[in-house]
Length: 265
Image 1 (cartoon, rainbow, N blue to C red):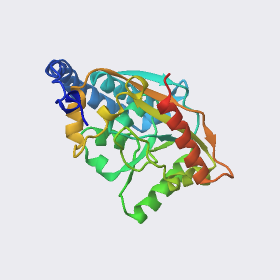
Image 2 (cartoon, rainbow, N blue to C red):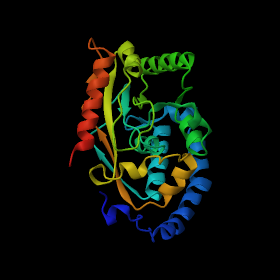
Image 3 (cartoon, rainbow, N blue to C red):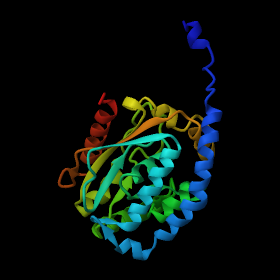
Image 4 (cartoon, rainbow, N blue to C red):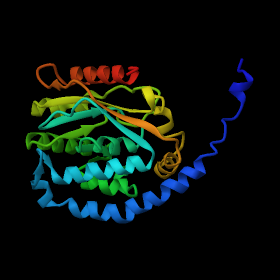
C-alpha cells in the first residue's frame, strides 16, 4: 500500500520562475548574437584550418554548445579522452540535449531522426555540424545513411550514433541495434562507447529525459527552468572493429556504457 508521502503531489519548485528570469536573457543573447557569429565561422575555410589538431569550425561548435549548456544550468564534466582520428562514437540517448552535450566535448556527425532537422535552433546547428538524417521505417533511407557513414569514416571523419534507436525514459538502457555498427566493420575503424550522464551518479537522467507526451519545445522550456546539475561525458575504452562483427561491438559497447552509468564515481 502506498504511504501518504507517496500519494502527495510533488513539492512546487518555487525557484523555477527565478531561474527563468536569470537564464532567459542569457539565452536570448546567445541566440541573437552568438548564434549568427557561430554560423558565420562554420565555413569551408575554417574546416581546413586546425588548432592543436582540431578543426577550427569544430572548436567554434564546441564553444557554442558549452555555453548553451551552462545557460541551462549544467556544469560540464569530462571523464576520459575522445580517440583521435576517424572513429564511431556510440552513446546512450535520453533527450535532444545529448547532442549538445556531446558536441561540447567532441564534434561528430551524428545519425539522427529526420524530425530533428525541423527543430528550431537545434536542427539548424545540427545540420551545420554534419548530422546524417534518417527517415524512420524507410529501408532505402537507412541504406543511404550506412553508405554515408562508411564514406565519412574512410575519409578520416568521425560519426556518432545512438544505437538504442530512440530516446528512453532515462531509467533504463535500451537494447543496442547491431546493424548501426556495420559501417564501423566495413571501414575497419575504432568504436568508442560514450556514457552521457546527468546529475550526480546519474540522478538526473529521468528529469532530463522527455516526459510522456512531451515534445521538443516543451522539454526545452522545462529544462531551462530546472535546477543546476552536473552533465558528464564519459569517454570509455575504445574497441577496434575487426573479425568480431557488429553484434559483438554492440554488446561490448552497451556493457561498458551500462557499467559507467551505474558507477558511483
